[in-house]
Length: 476
Image (tube, rainbow, N blue to C red; front, side, top):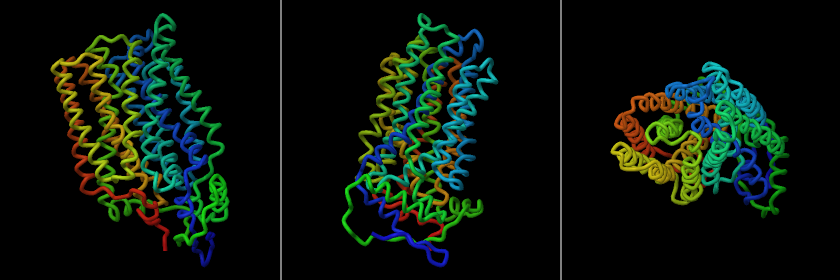
């Protein structure tokens, strides 16, 4: 077994190869649970925000309009954009572990504060800060997961973890059924209690994450080779001893930070085709998901007269389709490959969205039938959206991985996500199914276009080391 060694300011190490050759162990399961629960939180937040929209309109204190409900969704996403950029920058400078501790504290404090909102502006402020915490989580967690999971299962693991968003959605749906029932809880109390669920989950996360170490890849890139060696030895202790073998090594010059000019050159010059793919995937899936899911409850209440307290029942099958997609299709991203699977899931999602939109516009489906249609659409769309995060987090150099995730998450969410809920809230307010169809068709075109771009330019990253896909900036 090789060891990292320092010479003339350079480090020669086999740490990446040692991490990638390990079999799946209890350590990797712990990483998936402790870090992956972030997406459960986000799913809970988004579902509650959608499910309580009717209750927010009926609240004697808030009395929101459909447009104001859309504004609340946009505020959450705007916060996620700000949080991703700020905390993503800090994640590359200060480390993965520090930041995923800070961001969960921001999240649980803000979501608890949301329960005490007294008017539109206080609600928007607390939702914005909650989003900042979740946005920061995305950058720190995606970086850590990519750097700790063996290359041969990185695609499936990443997709399943991102798909766990819908476990949170199911929890939010069940919570909404109980907390929004006026026979059990008053209309102005139920939605407040709903937001406390996220704060409780946040406390559980704090306990679980105590056992997750700093990323050895991040430590070695910052010259902390002895500490990185100790972490790798600890991770290896969870697995049977590996046979002696000469492993490939990496030589690099450690750095404490990367100038923003080098970040920009890497993203927009060195890796321009990858940047086109990342931007297309993130923007289209952000519009697709946030526009539809943030306003799903409004479609049911306004066009199908579904009581707000019953929305949770419709979210459960919707969530099931979304979770099963990455779970069942994820292996194919590691076997058939990234390019055909990313392109295929995006294009098929767009076509199915257009078809479902036409059925809705022509009043050919009931509320239950529409939910079944959405479950089928999002079986594929969930795998597609998860692959966007996978693509961004594995195709850029180690030193700027978190910031790259932040940049494309922010650009995608800013361009596609923030505008989506507001736009669809306004379209629903018109009372016209044809107006809503126009929004669906726009989302379908975005998804199909992104799929075509991925087919042409996506990187074949399946089963390859992160350092092979994109050499670290400090590599010699």
